[in-house]
Amino acid sequence: MPHSPEDKKRVLTRVRRIKGQVAALERALESGESCLAILQQIAAVRGAATGLMGEMVEIHLKDELVSGETTPDQRAVRMAEVSHLLRAYLK
Image (cartoon, rainbow, N blue to C red; front, side, top):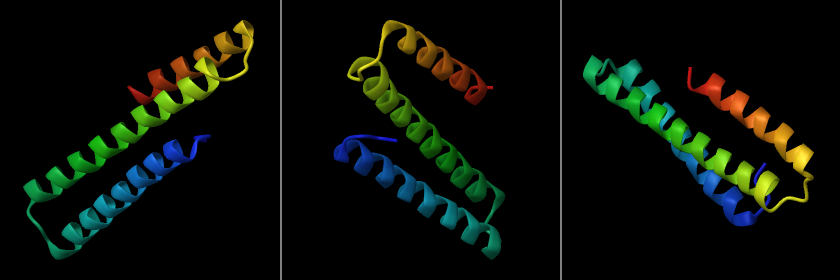
């Protein structure tokens, strides 16, 4: 969870944008838009989700590993957790 109000606002803005894109995708499917238009909308949703993931990883690393009050052992464990998550995400 983002700790600073600025980070939280940025993440929520991204989530709301994704929500709007998914709603537009649903409308396109319901109205029978062309496959190309639907594929473009899916690509936009995927790009937005990837941007959200990048933003959250950056916030997490900053909050937990850089400015957080963690010991070197805790940082190593948390870094391993993030690495595992990123590997799963990138599959």
